[in-house]
Amino acid sequence: MTEKIADKRVARTKRVIRDALTQLMEEKGFEGITVRDLTEKAQINRGTFYLHYRDKYDLLEQSEEEILKGIAAITENIDPVDAMAYTSNDEPFPIILKLFEFFQEHAEFLKVILGANGNASFQVKLKSFIKKIFYSKLVTKLNKEGIQVPVEILLAYLSSAHLGVVQHWLETGMEKSPREITLILTKMTLLGPGYVAGLKPPIEK
Amino acid sequence: MTEKIADKRVARTKRVIRDALTQLMEEKGFEGITVRDLTEKAQINRGTFYLHYRDKYDLLEQSEEEILKGIAAITENIDPVDAMAYTSNDEPFPIILKLFEFFQEHAEFLKVILGANGNASFQVKLKSFIKKIFYSKLVTKLNKEGIQVPVEILLAYLSSAHLGVVQHWLETGMEKSPREITLILTKMTLLGPGYVAGLKPPIEK
DNA sequence: AATAAAAATCAACATTGTGTTCATTAATCT
DNA sequence: AGATTAATGAACACAATGTTGATTTTTATT
Image (cartoon, rainbow over all chains, first blue to last red; front, side, top):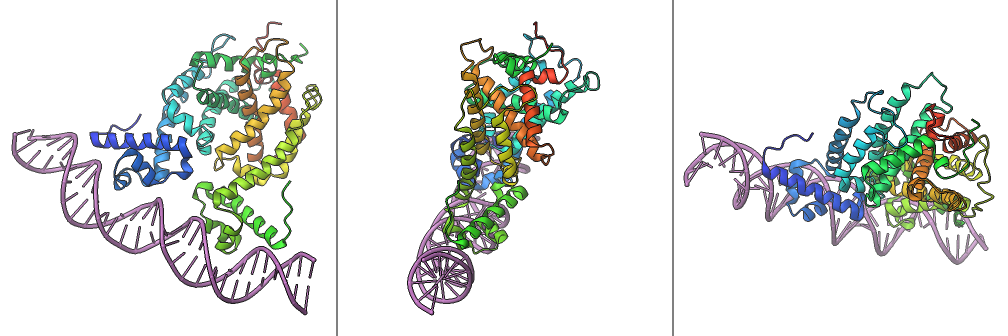
């Protein structure tokens, strides 16, 4: 995933800089961070920073890029039939489950980047991955039974809802396991939020 | 809503600064904007900016604050029974409809602040308003029929889904009317995204 | 273990944006 | 019309930026 780093010093430097980024973003958001802040927190020379990154935006991009590559690896080989294979109420969507396991591994960074001090553009990128997943699920259904709402809007609804639950899950310390949270998501999506909330389901059967 | 501004010059200055903010955020995001950028775009003296705002963050906060007050005015007087009064499949939630009408009025600013170059913390604040709406709807149902998923997660799901549709609606030029888009949202929420997508609803009736 | 190669440090530099000030000009309110 | 208040323009010290060149330290290689 990440390019192999030959020199131990480089690996260490990049690691301490990224750790500093995560910590500082949590404290004051990317906005308020200076390169000096980063290098002080990381305890390296300011010049060293510029040996590896053009500026702080470059650092952010590279950090995000790495995560997005990991997500792409999970989502890009979606077999519409198999990967989201059905899916009873008590069997989680396999891909969603895999994603939650990946999120858990990178929770520290994702928590800040997807949080209130985070980066809106990263959210958009992540959301489009999630959209892709649901789209691949929907294409098989399209033109069979009519979809009752515009597909684009349905995708916006579903991807946002799922990302929102990821954010909430990270924010509250990941109390549920990836499997548990995926099951809950599956349930809300298949049965409908209204139904699971106990609202009378106005389905004229 | 906004404090009455006595002097016409002040009103004009604040207006051109905020217009500049909206434009520049669209171009390069809040991150990259300098006070010099703002005053050049607004064609005013740089010192004049500091007569009204402490710094660019203060400008952003005040701009957001104004919007949030408008939303608060709509949401704070929610009568759980009345305001979200039922609500057949082809009657939109009144509050949601009102919100969309408000969003339409402030579309230009909201589009950028909720977009890829926008501000994550504003999203969080707006989402919590939406959560409040659904919470007020749910409390009446609580402890009656059991809710099948944790309330907090359900609220995260619903509020994120709704905010996501708002973002998509703004992003794509508000082609649907507030009433149309609210109806679609109501439908997806009450019937369930799975159902409206044509998935077999696994409801064992 | 010795040496060549590469990375990190340190100090210095010009540049740019910041936020403040003060005297002056211009627009507005009554 | 005169008093008041806002906007302008120029100047200032300060802080962060991104770059450079010389030096030291660490790593990889033989």
